[in-house]
Image 1 (cartoon, rainbow, N blue to C red):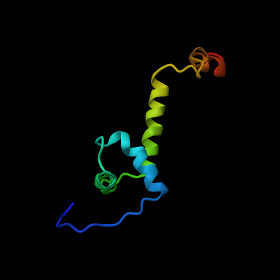
Image 2 (image 1 turned 90 degrees about the horizontal axis):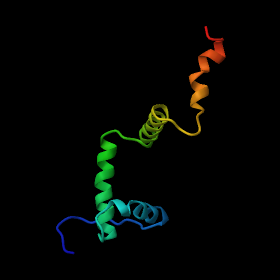
Image 3 (image 1 turned 90 degrees about the vertical axis):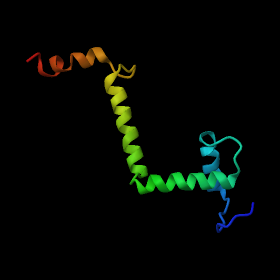
Length: 93
């Protein structure tokens, strides 16, 4: 498509293919690969400019998991034993 904007070349290697496949459910249906790369570049640049990092995302996910585990009963935790923890550990002091 004719444009006055300069174009850039992007190698469509395995990593980019995986990224496009991973992002596809979150993008407008039926857009071209070049439009997907363009849109993802804009979102990624904004994300980086706001100071987000993978570490931030992993930390946030871990915190959300801790909140979920600590605020509702989970089958992996024996909540009855947990309720008796002080009594069993300290003899009811």
